[in-house]
Length: 205
Image (cartoon, rainbow, N blue to C red; front, side, top):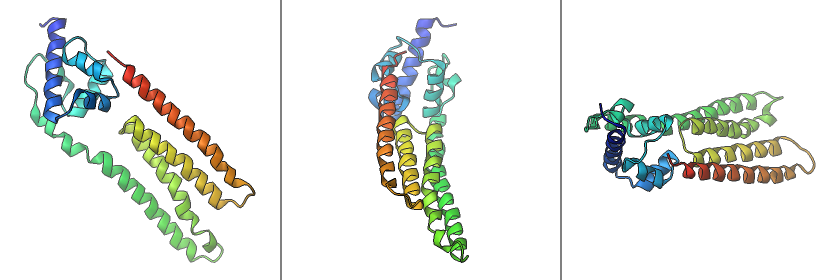
């Protein structure tokens, strides 16, 4: 059985090897994990080991098993590393397909409403309301798969597309001032993102 020092050093060597296989700098890997480059440096030097959730994120990012990552064997299963290329596209194509499906359904509503006398004037709203719905879908996927920056962008899309749909669908006096409220929400969203990014950068395990 290896001692704690050997365990940390062995993990650091494996992390260093995986990072270099991917062609990443410590800063680039740290950005992917929402940590500081100092934390990654300490891990690779064997000075510390990340917490259990971060170990899961590292294993998932490099597409290796946690057992492989933490075992006392020196080799890394590079075959598992290559599996990343099979799973990563889903994080892009699933959201895109979902957005496409939302607008496809909207187009069906548009065609149906255009052919109904009492509803034809409201047909355009199908696409107007599809915008915030698609933004909400992107927000859900960003919270599952994507990093903090993309969550900030998707939430911003929800804010502005929702305001736009309300503005275009309601004929109310001075409704344009709704965009002032959106501006405040946007600033709040950016501040929350910056605060979350700051906390992530301060993590040094």
